[in-house]
Amino acid sequence: MNRSRRSHSRICKPATARSPPLYSWLQWLTFSSFGFNVFSFALLKNLILFALYACTYFVARPLVGIGGAITASASMLLFPEIAWESQRDLTHTVLLTTIASGTLWCYFAMLRKPSCWRYALFGALIACGLLSKYNFTIFIGGLACASLLVPEHRAIVWNRKLLITTAVALLLFMPHGYWLLTHLAEASGGTLAKMREGAKASYAHNLLRGFGSMLGGAIEFVTPMWLVYLFVVRRHPGQTSIDTRGTTARFFLISYATFFALMCIILLSGHISNIKGRWLQQILFPVPLVLFVLFPALARTEVYRPILRVVAALAILILVAIPLRVQLGPYFNSYSRSHHPYPQLSRELAQRFPQATAMIVGEKLAAGNLYFQRPSIPTYILDRFLAHPTALRGPFLFVTPSSTHHGQLDSLLRLYPNAKVKQQGQLDIPYQKSRGPTMAFDYALIEP
Image 1 (spheres, rainbow, N blue to C red):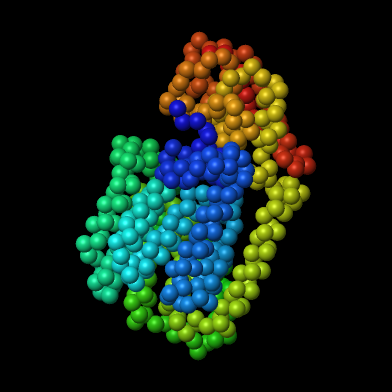
Image 2: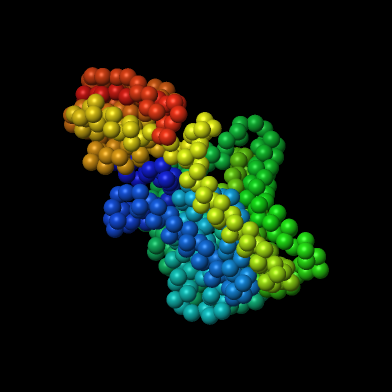
Protein backbone atom coordinates (compact mmCIF):
# COMPACT_ATOMS: atom_id res chain seq x y z
CA MET A 1 0.00 0.00 0.00
CA ASN A 2 1.43 3.41 -0.96
CA ARG A 3 1.13 5.63 2.03
CA SER A 4 1.34 9.36 1.90
CA ARG A 5 4.85 9.40 3.30
CA ARG A 6 5.79 9.93 -0.36
CA SER A 7 3.75 13.13 -0.38
CA HIS A 8 5.44 15.73 1.70
CA SER A 9 4.81 19.00 3.44
CA ARG A 10 4.01 22.39 2.07
CA ILE A 11 7.64 23.22 1.33
CA CYS A 12 7.85 20.88 -1.66
CA LYS A 13 5.57 19.46 -4.25
CA PRO A 14 4.13 16.07 -3.26
CA ALA A 15 5.47 13.12 -5.16
CA THR A 16 2.91 10.92 -6.80
CA ALA A 17 2.78 7.34 -8.01
CA ARG A 18 3.06 8.63 -11.57
CA SER A 19 6.42 10.33 -10.95
CA PRO A 20 9.73 8.59 -11.63
CA PRO A 21 11.29 7.47 -8.36
CA LEU A 22 14.72 9.13 -8.08
CA TYR A 23 13.61 12.17 -6.07
CA SER A 24 11.68 9.94 -3.68
CA TRP A 25 14.75 7.75 -3.21
CA LEU A 26 16.90 10.79 -2.44
CA GLN A 27 14.27 12.13 -0.05
CA TRP A 28 14.14 8.76 1.71
CA LEU A 29 17.94 8.93 2.08
CA THR A 30 17.77 12.34 3.76
CA PHE A 31 14.94 11.16 6.01
CA SER A 32 17.01 8.15 7.04
CA SER A 33 20.01 10.37 7.77
CA PHE A 34 18.44 13.43 9.37
CA GLY A 35 14.95 12.37 10.39
CA PHE A 36 11.46 13.14 9.09
CA ASN A 37 11.49 16.92 9.50
CA VAL A 38 11.57 20.24 7.66
CA PHE A 39 15.36 20.26 7.69
CA SER A 40 15.46 17.09 5.57
CA PHE A 41 13.07 18.60 3.05
CA ALA A 42 15.03 21.85 2.79
CA LEU A 43 18.44 20.16 2.76
CA LEU A 44 17.71 17.99 -0.26
CA LYS A 45 16.17 20.79 -2.32
CA ASN A 46 19.04 23.19 -1.59
CA LEU A 47 21.73 20.59 -2.24
CA ILE A 48 20.17 19.92 -5.64
CA LEU A 49 19.98 23.65 -6.42
CA PHE A 50 23.60 24.10 -5.36
CA ALA A 51 24.59 21.21 -7.63
CA LEU A 52 22.74 22.88 -10.52
CA TYR A 53 24.76 26.10 -10.20
CA ALA A 54 28.00 24.18 -9.65
CA CYS A 55 27.51 21.90 -12.66
CA THR A 56 26.63 24.83 -14.90
CA TYR A 57 29.78 26.61 -13.77
CA PHE A 58 31.93 23.57 -14.57
CA VAL A 59 30.27 23.19 -17.97
CA ALA A 60 30.96 26.82 -18.85
CA ARG A 61 34.48 27.29 -17.48
CA PRO A 62 36.37 25.49 -20.29
CA LEU A 63 34.14 27.14 -22.90
CA VAL A 64 34.04 30.81 -21.85
CA GLY A 65 36.54 31.15 -19.00
CA ILE A 66 36.09 31.65 -15.28
CA GLY A 67 34.37 35.06 -15.53
CA GLY A 68 31.93 33.80 -18.13
CA ALA A 69 31.28 30.63 -16.15
CA ILE A 70 30.45 32.59 -13.01
CA THR A 71 28.16 34.90 -14.97
CA ALA A 72 26.44 32.10 -16.88
CA SER A 73 25.81 30.14 -13.70
CA ALA A 74 24.65 33.12 -11.65
CA SER A 75 22.42 34.29 -14.51
CA MET A 76 20.09 31.37 -13.88
CA LEU A 77 18.72 33.53 -11.06
CA LEU A 78 17.25 35.68 -13.83
CA PHE A 79 14.92 32.79 -14.72
CA PRO A 80 11.79 33.05 -12.52
CA GLU A 81 11.21 29.30 -12.72
CA ILE A 82 14.62 28.69 -11.15
CA ALA A 83 15.01 31.74 -8.92
CA TRP A 84 11.50 31.74 -7.42
CA GLU A 85 9.43 28.70 -8.33
CA SER A 86 12.24 26.25 -7.63
CA GLN A 87 12.52 27.60 -4.09
CA ARG A 88 8.90 26.88 -3.24
CA ASP A 89 8.00 24.00 -5.57
CA LEU A 90 9.21 22.00 -8.61
CA THR A 91 11.01 19.11 -6.90
CA HIS A 92 11.36 16.73 -9.85
CA THR A 93 11.95 19.56 -12.33
CA VAL A 94 14.82 20.94 -10.27
CA LEU A 95 16.40 17.49 -10.02
CA LEU A 96 15.99 16.94 -13.76
CA THR A 97 17.62 20.30 -14.59
CA THR A 98 20.55 19.53 -12.31
CA ILE A 99 21.08 16.14 -13.95
CA ALA A 100 20.82 17.76 -17.41
CA SER A 101 23.54 20.20 -16.37
CA GLY A 102 25.68 17.35 -15.05
CA THR A 103 25.13 15.41 -18.28
CA LEU A 104 26.23 18.42 -20.33
CA TRP A 105 29.37 18.73 -18.20
CA CYS A 106 30.14 15.03 -18.66
CA TYR A 107 29.62 15.31 -22.41
CA PHE A 108 32.19 18.10 -22.80
CA ALA A 109 34.53 16.27 -20.43
CA MET A 110 34.30 13.25 -22.75
CA LEU A 111 35.25 15.48 -25.67
CA ARG A 112 38.36 16.66 -23.83
CA LYS A 113 39.35 13.21 -22.58
CA PRO A 114 37.20 10.27 -23.73
CA SER A 115 38.12 7.86 -20.93
CA CYS A 116 36.08 4.79 -20.08
CA TRP A 117 34.96 6.08 -16.68
CA ARG A 118 33.54 9.23 -18.30
CA TYR A 119 31.48 7.08 -20.69
CA ALA A 120 30.25 5.07 -17.69
CA LEU A 121 29.35 8.25 -15.81
CA PHE A 122 27.55 9.54 -18.91
CA GLY A 123 25.40 6.40 -18.93
CA ALA A 124 24.68 6.74 -15.21
CA LEU A 125 23.58 10.36 -15.70
CA ILE A 126 21.30 9.38 -18.57
CA ALA A 127 19.65 6.75 -16.35
CA CYS A 128 19.32 9.24 -13.48
CA GLY A 129 17.72 11.77 -15.81
CA LEU A 130 15.14 9.24 -16.96
CA LEU A 131 14.52 8.27 -13.34
CA SER A 132 13.86 11.94 -12.57
CA LYS A 133 11.40 12.80 -15.36
CA TYR A 134 10.59 10.95 -18.54
CA ASN A 135 10.87 14.03 -20.73
CA PHE A 136 14.63 13.82 -20.24
CA THR A 137 14.45 11.87 -23.49
CA ILE A 138 14.04 15.22 -25.31
CA PHE A 139 17.28 16.53 -23.81
CA ILE A 140 19.17 13.34 -24.67
CA GLY A 141 17.68 13.36 -28.17
CA GLY A 142 18.99 16.88 -28.80
CA LEU A 143 22.39 16.00 -27.36
CA ALA A 144 22.70 12.86 -29.49
CA CYS A 145 21.61 14.58 -32.69
CA ALA A 146 24.02 17.48 -32.22
CA SER A 147 26.94 15.17 -31.44
CA LEU A 148 26.25 13.27 -34.67
CA LEU A 149 25.87 16.35 -36.87
CA VAL A 150 28.99 18.13 -35.61
CA PRO A 151 31.85 16.18 -37.25
CA GLU A 152 34.43 17.18 -34.65
CA HIS A 153 32.23 15.80 -31.87
CA ARG A 154 31.18 12.72 -33.79
CA ALA A 155 34.79 11.67 -34.37
CA ILE A 156 35.49 11.71 -30.63
CA VAL A 157 32.25 10.60 -28.96
CA TRP A 158 30.87 7.96 -31.27
CA ASN A 159 33.04 4.89 -30.82
CA ARG A 160 32.92 1.50 -29.12
CA LYS A 161 33.09 3.09 -25.69
CA LEU A 162 29.47 4.15 -26.18
CA LEU A 163 28.64 0.52 -25.44
CA ILE A 164 29.75 1.26 -21.88
CA THR A 165 27.35 4.20 -21.75
CA THR A 166 24.51 2.10 -23.10
CA ALA A 167 25.18 -0.82 -20.76
CA VAL A 168 25.34 1.38 -17.64
CA ALA A 169 22.21 3.33 -18.59
CA LEU A 170 20.22 0.15 -19.30
CA LEU A 171 21.44 -1.57 -16.14
CA LEU A 172 20.40 1.31 -13.91
CA PHE A 173 17.12 2.10 -15.65
CA MET A 174 15.96 -1.43 -16.47
CA PRO A 175 14.17 -2.27 -13.16
CA HIS A 176 12.05 0.86 -13.33
CA GLY A 177 11.81 0.55 -17.10
CA TYR A 178 10.11 -2.83 -16.71
CA TRP A 179 7.59 -1.29 -14.31
CA LEU A 180 7.08 1.58 -16.75
CA LEU A 181 6.27 -0.77 -19.63
CA THR A 182 3.71 -2.64 -17.54
CA HIS A 183 2.16 0.51 -16.01
CA LEU A 184 2.43 2.97 -18.90
CA ALA A 185 -1.01 4.53 -18.40
CA GLU A 186 -0.41 5.06 -14.69
CA ALA A 187 3.06 6.51 -15.27
CA SER A 188 2.06 8.98 -17.98
CA GLY A 189 -1.54 9.74 -17.07
CA GLY A 190 -0.93 12.75 -14.82
CA THR A 191 1.45 14.56 -17.16
CA LEU A 192 -0.62 13.84 -20.27
CA ALA A 193 -3.75 15.10 -18.53
CA LYS A 194 -2.02 18.42 -17.80
CA MET A 195 -0.69 18.67 -21.34
CA ARG A 196 -4.14 17.94 -22.77
CA GLU A 197 -5.89 20.70 -20.83
CA GLY A 198 -8.34 22.27 -23.25
CA ALA A 199 -7.48 19.79 -26.01
CA LYS A 200 -11.09 19.01 -26.84
CA ALA A 201 -11.48 21.34 -29.78
CA SER A 202 -10.48 20.82 -33.41
CA TYR A 203 -7.07 19.61 -34.52
CA ALA A 204 -6.16 23.07 -35.85
CA HIS A 205 -7.21 24.72 -32.60
CA ASN A 206 -5.19 22.27 -30.50
CA LEU A 207 -2.22 22.72 -32.80
CA LEU A 208 -2.28 26.51 -32.58
CA ARG A 209 -2.85 26.43 -28.85
CA GLY A 210 0.00 23.95 -28.35
CA PHE A 211 2.51 25.91 -30.41
CA GLY A 212 1.36 29.12 -28.77
CA SER A 213 1.85 27.70 -25.29
CA MET A 214 5.32 26.41 -26.18
CA LEU A 215 6.39 29.73 -27.65
CA GLY A 216 4.81 31.68 -24.81
CA GLY A 217 6.36 29.40 -22.18
CA ALA A 218 9.82 29.79 -23.70
CA ILE A 219 9.53 33.58 -23.93
CA GLU A 220 8.18 33.83 -20.40
CA PHE A 221 11.02 31.66 -19.10
CA VAL A 222 13.88 33.72 -20.61
CA THR A 223 12.35 37.23 -20.60
CA PRO A 224 13.91 38.68 -17.40
CA MET A 225 17.31 37.36 -18.48
CA TRP A 226 17.30 38.75 -22.00
CA LEU A 227 16.04 42.12 -20.75
CA VAL A 228 18.99 42.40 -18.37
CA TYR A 229 21.43 41.21 -21.02
CA LEU A 230 20.00 43.64 -23.58
CA PHE A 231 20.32 46.52 -21.11
CA VAL A 232 23.97 45.66 -20.50
CA VAL A 233 24.91 44.82 -24.10
CA ARG A 234 23.45 48.01 -25.58
CA ARG A 235 26.49 49.79 -24.16
CA HIS A 236 28.71 47.61 -26.36
CA PRO A 237 27.06 47.84 -29.80
CA GLY A 238 30.23 46.89 -31.63
CA GLN A 239 30.54 43.58 -29.80
CA THR A 240 27.25 41.95 -30.80
CA SER A 241 28.26 40.10 -33.95
CA ILE A 242 27.27 36.43 -33.87
CA ASP A 243 29.84 33.73 -34.57
CA THR A 244 28.49 30.30 -35.59
CA ARG A 245 31.73 28.91 -37.01
CA GLY A 246 32.96 27.31 -33.79
CA THR A 247 32.16 23.69 -33.04
CA THR A 248 30.60 24.55 -29.67
CA ALA A 249 28.35 27.19 -31.24
CA ARG A 250 27.19 24.73 -33.90
CA PHE A 251 26.66 22.07 -31.26
CA PHE A 252 24.33 24.30 -29.23
CA LEU A 253 22.45 25.57 -32.29
CA ILE A 254 21.80 22.03 -33.51
CA SER A 255 20.84 20.94 -30.00
CA TYR A 256 18.21 23.65 -29.69
CA ALA A 257 16.92 23.02 -33.20
CA THR A 258 16.51 19.36 -32.26
CA PHE A 259 14.89 20.12 -28.91
CA PHE A 260 12.18 22.20 -30.49
CA ALA A 261 11.80 19.88 -33.47
CA LEU A 262 11.03 17.03 -31.07
CA MET A 263 8.56 19.25 -29.23
CA CYS A 264 6.92 20.14 -32.54
CA ILE A 265 6.58 16.47 -33.46
CA ILE A 266 4.77 15.89 -30.18
CA LEU A 267 2.49 18.88 -30.78
CA LEU A 268 1.70 17.78 -34.33
CA SER A 269 -0.16 14.79 -32.90
CA GLY A 270 -2.92 17.27 -32.01
CA HIS A 271 -3.45 15.64 -28.61
CA ILE A 272 -1.21 18.05 -26.69
CA SER A 273 -2.28 21.65 -26.29
CA ASN A 274 -0.54 22.96 -23.18
CA ILE A 275 3.25 23.28 -22.76
CA LYS A 276 4.25 25.00 -19.54
CA GLY A 277 7.43 26.99 -19.04
CA ARG A 278 8.77 24.71 -16.35
CA TRP A 279 8.66 21.76 -18.76
CA LEU A 280 11.20 23.66 -20.89
CA GLN A 281 13.55 24.31 -17.98
CA GLN A 282 15.83 21.37 -18.75
CA ILE A 283 16.63 22.77 -22.19
CA LEU A 284 16.58 26.52 -21.49
CA PHE A 285 18.75 26.70 -18.36
CA PRO A 286 22.07 27.04 -20.32
CA VAL A 287 20.85 29.96 -22.46
CA PRO A 288 23.25 32.47 -20.78
CA LEU A 289 26.18 30.19 -21.60
CA VAL A 290 24.93 29.74 -25.18
CA LEU A 291 24.80 33.52 -25.62
CA PHE A 292 28.42 33.90 -24.58
CA VAL A 293 29.39 31.10 -26.96
CA LEU A 294 27.47 32.64 -29.88
CA PHE A 295 28.67 36.18 -29.12
CA PRO A 296 32.29 35.61 -28.03
CA ALA A 297 33.10 39.32 -28.12
CA LEU A 298 30.77 39.78 -25.13
CA ALA A 299 32.85 37.43 -22.99
CA ARG A 300 34.59 40.29 -21.19
CA THR A 301 34.71 41.80 -17.73
CA GLU A 302 32.85 44.96 -18.79
CA VAL A 303 29.83 42.79 -19.60
CA TYR A 304 30.10 40.38 -16.67
CA ARG A 305 30.21 42.97 -13.89
CA PRO A 306 26.88 44.78 -14.46
CA ILE A 307 25.10 41.44 -14.99
CA LEU A 308 26.49 40.09 -11.72
CA ARG A 309 25.45 43.28 -9.90
CA VAL A 310 21.87 42.81 -11.09
CA VAL A 311 21.96 39.13 -10.12
CA ALA A 312 23.32 39.93 -6.65
CA ALA A 313 20.59 42.52 -6.06
CA LEU A 314 17.95 40.06 -7.26
CA ALA A 315 19.31 37.32 -4.98
CA ILE A 316 19.00 39.61 -1.96
CA LEU A 317 15.50 40.61 -3.05
CA ILE A 318 14.44 36.96 -3.31
CA LEU A 319 15.86 36.14 0.13
CA VAL A 320 13.78 38.95 1.58
CA ALA A 321 10.67 38.38 -0.53
CA ILE A 322 10.18 34.68 0.23
CA PRO A 323 9.60 35.10 3.99
CA LEU A 324 7.83 38.44 3.51
CA ARG A 325 5.37 36.76 1.15
CA VAL A 326 4.29 34.47 3.97
CA GLN A 327 4.22 37.19 6.60
CA LEU A 328 2.50 39.94 4.59
CA GLY A 329 0.28 37.87 2.31
CA PRO A 330 -2.69 37.77 4.73
CA TYR A 331 -2.76 41.56 4.87
CA PHE A 332 -3.61 41.50 1.16
CA ASN A 333 -5.94 38.47 1.42
CA SER A 334 -3.31 36.36 -0.33
CA TYR A 335 -2.87 32.86 1.10
CA SER A 336 -0.34 30.37 -0.21
CA ARG A 337 0.28 26.74 0.72
CA SER A 338 2.46 27.97 3.57
CA HIS A 339 -0.69 29.36 5.20
CA HIS A 340 -2.68 26.13 5.02
CA PRO A 341 -3.60 25.26 8.62
CA TYR A 342 -2.45 21.64 8.71
CA PRO A 343 -0.73 21.83 12.13
CA GLN A 344 -3.92 23.23 13.71
CA LEU A 345 -6.07 20.70 11.85
CA SER A 346 -3.89 17.82 13.02
CA ARG A 347 -4.10 18.94 16.66
CA GLU A 348 -7.86 19.37 16.41
CA LEU A 349 -8.35 15.90 14.94
CA ALA A 350 -6.05 14.34 17.56
CA GLN A 351 -8.04 15.94 20.38
CA ARG A 352 -11.44 15.04 18.96
CA PHE A 353 -10.67 11.52 17.77
CA PRO A 354 -7.89 9.96 19.83
CA GLN A 355 -9.38 6.52 19.05
CA ALA A 356 -8.71 6.82 15.30
CA THR A 357 -6.13 4.25 14.18
CA ALA A 358 -5.62 5.56 10.63
CA MET A 359 -6.50 8.42 8.29
CA ILE A 360 -7.68 8.36 4.70
CA VAL A 361 -7.30 11.78 3.10
CA GLY A 362 -9.01 12.89 -0.08
CA GLU A 363 -6.25 15.14 -1.41
CA LYS A 364 -2.53 14.40 -1.63
CA LEU A 365 -1.20 17.74 -0.34
CA ALA A 366 -3.41 17.46 2.74
CA ALA A 367 -2.41 13.82 3.18
CA GLY A 368 1.29 14.62 3.08
CA ASN A 369 0.97 17.47 5.56
CA LEU A 370 -1.20 15.52 8.00
CA TYR A 371 1.21 12.61 7.88
CA PHE A 372 4.08 15.05 8.44
CA GLN A 373 2.34 16.32 11.59
CA ARG A 374 1.58 12.82 12.95
CA PRO A 375 3.84 10.20 11.33
CA SER A 376 2.75 7.65 13.94
CA ILE A 377 -0.72 7.46 12.34
CA PRO A 378 -0.95 5.45 9.08
CA THR A 379 -2.14 7.91 6.45
CA TYR A 380 -3.46 6.99 3.02
CA ILE A 381 -4.32 9.01 -0.08
CA LEU A 382 -7.89 8.20 -1.08
CA ASP A 383 -7.40 7.43 -4.78
CA ARG A 384 -4.54 5.05 -4.02
CA PHE A 385 -6.54 3.45 -1.24
CA LEU A 386 -9.48 2.90 -3.60
CA ALA A 387 -7.16 1.35 -6.18
CA HIS A 388 -5.41 -0.87 -3.62
CA PRO A 389 -7.70 -1.25 -0.58
CA THR A 390 -6.37 -2.73 2.63
CA ALA A 391 -8.04 -3.99 5.79
CA LEU A 392 -8.21 -1.41 8.57
CA ARG A 393 -8.70 -2.35 12.18
CA GLY A 394 -10.56 -0.06 14.49
CA PRO A 395 -12.17 3.29 13.68
CA PHE A 396 -10.45 5.46 11.08
CA LEU A 397 -10.84 9.05 9.96
CA PHE A 398 -11.74 10.29 6.52
CA VAL A 399 -10.54 13.89 6.04
CA THR A 400 -10.51 16.12 2.99
CA PRO A 401 -10.58 19.83 2.10
CA SER A 402 -14.24 20.68 1.57
CA SER A 403 -13.47 22.02 -1.89
CA THR A 404 -12.43 18.54 -3.04
CA HIS A 405 -15.14 16.45 -1.32
CA HIS A 406 -17.54 15.75 -4.23
CA GLY A 407 -18.69 12.26 -3.32
CA GLN A 408 -15.34 11.02 -2.01
CA LEU A 409 -16.89 9.69 1.20
CA ASP A 410 -19.48 7.71 -0.77
CA SER A 411 -16.69 6.13 -2.84
CA LEU A 412 -14.90 5.13 0.34
CA LEU A 413 -18.01 3.70 2.00
CA ARG A 414 -18.66 1.49 -1.01
CA LEU A 415 -15.52 -0.38 -0.01
CA TYR A 416 -17.02 -0.97 3.44
CA PRO A 417 -20.74 -1.64 2.93
CA ASN A 418 -21.15 -2.65 6.58
CA ALA A 419 -19.26 0.32 7.98
CA LYS A 420 -20.89 2.79 10.31
CA VAL A 421 -20.28 6.53 10.19
CA LYS A 422 -20.05 7.34 13.88
CA GLN A 423 -19.48 11.06 13.47
CA GLN A 424 -19.43 13.44 10.54
CA GLY A 425 -19.06 17.17 10.09
CA GLN A 426 -16.97 20.09 8.93
CA LEU A 427 -14.14 21.98 10.60
CA ASP A 428 -13.33 25.59 9.77
CA ILE A 429 -9.69 26.14 10.68
CA PRO A 430 -8.14 29.65 10.44
CA TYR A 431 -5.29 30.00 8.00
CA GLN A 432 -1.89 30.35 9.62
CA LYS A 433 -1.07 34.02 10.23
CA SER A 434 -4.65 34.68 9.18
CA ARG A 435 -6.64 37.84 9.83
CA GLY A 436 -9.94 35.99 9.75
CA PRO A 437 -10.38 33.68 6.73
CA THR A 438 -10.63 29.98 7.38
CA MET A 439 -10.10 26.77 5.41
CA ALA A 440 -12.88 24.18 5.55
CA PHE A 441 -12.32 20.44 5.96
CA ASP A 442 -14.90 17.66 5.89
CA TYR A 443 -14.36 14.74 8.22
CA ALA A 444 -16.02 11.45 9.13
CA LEU A 445 -15.16 8.92 11.82
CA ILE A 446 -15.85 5.46 10.39
CA GLU A 447 -16.11 2.11 12.17
CA PRO A 448 -15.29 -0.57 9.54
